Image (cartoon, rainbow, N blue to C red; front, side):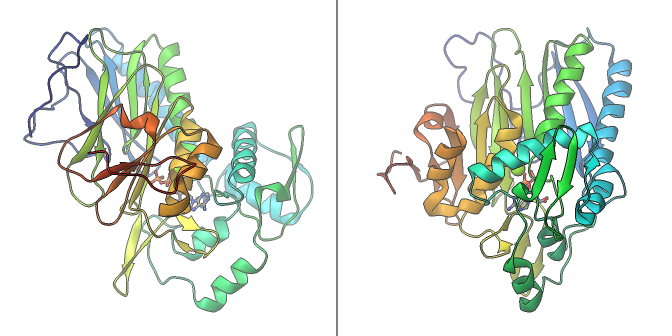
Length: 362
Ligand code: ADP
Ligand code: MG
């Protein structure tokens, strides 16, 4: 693979590829630029990679210790099964009495309620029990999958985010099976908070990349941040996209967390309609200036599947979206099509919310 020529208006040779999926393009042209500094952390079960521009001007030791502490705190606050504020909140919600919620949880409850309502419950962080039943509430995801009887019971009267009453900072659970799991949106909030902290520490240009989900702040002089979108079926870059300042790119994929069970891949994005891992798309990527929306929308499009994803993208205001199908075809919204550069031959088509399908574009 060779680097494409620099886009007009971008002076430097600068071709950047931060490969989604914490995977670097060994052997390709795209080593990190020498004019950046990098710090690496571990949080949310993944590597968090921070790129700072320009090199040599930041207090790296201080950033490492302060951002490291923040990431650790957020990890603890929003963890779905390790004992902490969220697990305590879930116990209190199940008890059905009003209680004063930790502020860090309130923001996520509010956003989750909006997103559940907007997606008609396809994106529903109240379904922690269902996610746990599939073996995802442990460090190493593992089977067995729930039995048909367990699944039927879980799907009989599933909780929704609207089953949480909110009055100021007080919450009250209205469904005994409600269990919050913010795995589909908390990374978005964590990345936003990390960039805020970096700004407080004097950083103007940075990317925070948590296992392939990332957001930019500022941009290097004379070039854009160029990001690779991972091919869900191969350790290579499918496409690249240039990001300006304050843009988030999030991907949800069937290759992320999961296990094989009787020849079938069981991954952690669960379709509330079937109660099973979502089928039909191999990945969904959303570019947006709101990282929480980008995170949740990517997960929602995976669940919506090959037919409905453009309608859900529209509904969520995720106008810049791209999905991949099991046969390798890429489908894109019109708005992202002009920003994406494919890195190999692919069959792609533009999809709009109005039309079910459309002709090939390349
Ligand atoms: P990743 O965290 O790998 O980027 P996603 O953003 O797609 O992946 O989030 C997957 C996580 O979202 C799951 O681990 C689970 O915590 C949560 N989740 C799974 N199904 C749903 C759903 N239908 N609605 C909301 N959250 C979900
Ligand atoms: Mg997500």
